[in-house]
Length: 153
Ligand SMILES: CC[C@@H](C(=O)O)C(=O)SCCNC(=O)CCNC(=O)[C@H](O)C(C)(C)COP(=O)(O)OP(=O)(O)OC[C@H]1O[C@@H](n2cnc3c(N)ncnc32)[C@H](O)[C@@H]1OP(=O)(O)O
Ligand SMILES: [Co+2]
Image: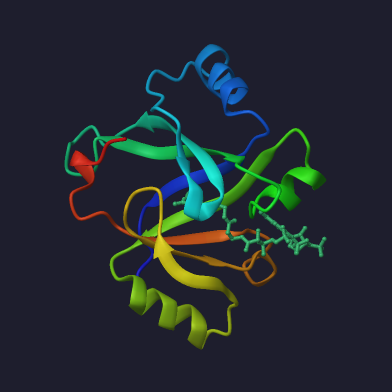
């Protein structure tokens, strides 16, 4: 397996509205996408874009900040926010070319995969790896979107 681009950094927040104000007014973010609910993953999501590849050979946006707010107490991020009520960095997401190849790669290395491969916020397959097996970082692996430059939400 070959490591791909750092697609996004997941940031858990008790309030997407307040986080949007922070990225816009404090961090100077100029491209903040519309928030949406992802019921299957138990979270409300909002992407903040950082600038993209100036050569245009890559996607039109760079690594994103993925703001995630729990939709209910059953959300997979509810426990994290109970321990970190102000929110904070939650996971790192890397792209790979082939999700099944990546799954086998990590399985062979004895890494714990958290649940089945499912469709993530970018519409491509994702899975998660346990933070205790990944140097303390909850790690999301996602298949590279086929037409990244046209992705929008
Ligand atoms: C928006 C959709 C999608 C996308 O397309 O991008 C997403 O990103 S969805 C993001 C939310 N979904 C998930 O996180 C799914 C995978 N997560 C899980 O299965 C669980 O959250 C978890 C990682 C297994 C944690 O479970 P939980 O019950 O909340 O906590 P535990 O107390 O059992 O944790 C065990 C251990 O791990 C430490 N921990 C927990 N979360 C993290 C984290 N985000 N980063 C680093 N370490 C973490 C926790 O502190 C415990 O350690 P000890 O206290 O030392 O035991
Ligand atoms: Co994510």
